[in-house]
Image (tube, each protein chain N blue to C red):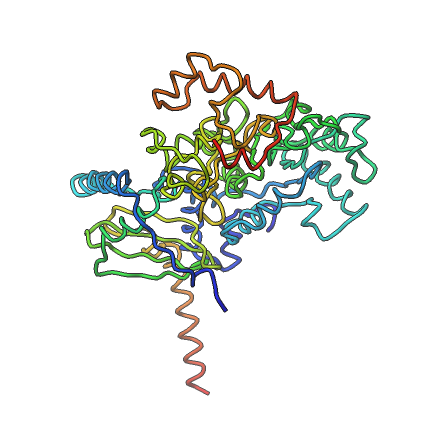
Length: 363
Length: 140
């Protein structure tokens, strides 16, 4: 695609009809959680979009985020997004390697200052001068700082890049940090999740292509359209929570009837993500629908927040009255539970809880 | 060879609660708006947290009308008018036959069914080329 060619021109040259483009825009509007009536506006905006250059930096990560994206449903949609952007540098996907690959990264920085996007997955080790993760002899920290200096914006994909993730978990041997811990002078969008829902990753790129700007963010820099609600807010099992119908073990009658998994450790009330609506594996299901509670993977320090199988309300210590009141009333996770959860997270940070089969069998 | 589709699954509606009545009520409101003010609207089914069985129950309740269209554009899209005139079920799939978006549209005719004006303008050239080619073949 030529640099000055619009996306509409490009798609037409590829033999994609106006109907195909409209279909693509309808799916994009759905992905961006826009009203379906906005598909026409999306079509108008995307049709005129130019092609931004994107550098993808992979640091201290498991490649799960890239796998999630490339295994996502709707390859046509994703491939179109990636045809619409110029993905100039990506360790896993690029064909070239070595000095030539690094030269491409430098070329993008020099040729498009202030215009290119950076996508980061993986945390950045800071301890011992960042020696625990290096590429081509440069530490991840130096690569990030050098590449970010002239970038238009940074998209941190996955909980590792957004909040430090699993490398950051206690005792954090490499001194893992998030992108926003290091870069303070560029617009940053966090797309957390372990991994993130792929449609959310492409949703942010689509928003940028459609509107020429990054989406509206919450206080943790997460796009509100995907992270504005908690799992609990949109969970189809919510009526059972309100009625006080909880599964007590993974194989009891409550579990078979699809009752709320709160007592089995579900972190839905304190987790912001789009799993309950966008779902996983081409919209097939999500953890709760498959019978397992949410583990809160799109929240900071989720790995250190205590057992995945203990209810948010449980603790060796006494609950505050506010937390108890909120739970008894069956209200949405109130300030009491939220405050208690923060307290529990800070306590759990100092030690790991061992999970046994007893945790999973008894509640 | 056994496939996932061979495993028989019986989906039992959750009984109450169910989202179906709420969605039908919303459709009624939007149908009135279409009838009285000419306002087209749609519901994105992927944005609704539905209970297992709700989707099937909604489809069964709305039923099938006279028109059923398949579009082949970047994968199949199935559109049919339900038994309720003005309410259409639109299901977009990609070239791997995976569902990418699903809507219920409240409209006289879904926009994707209409031919684009620019394509009509270009169609004249396309047809002229066909005519020229056919004439050339006839004169051989």
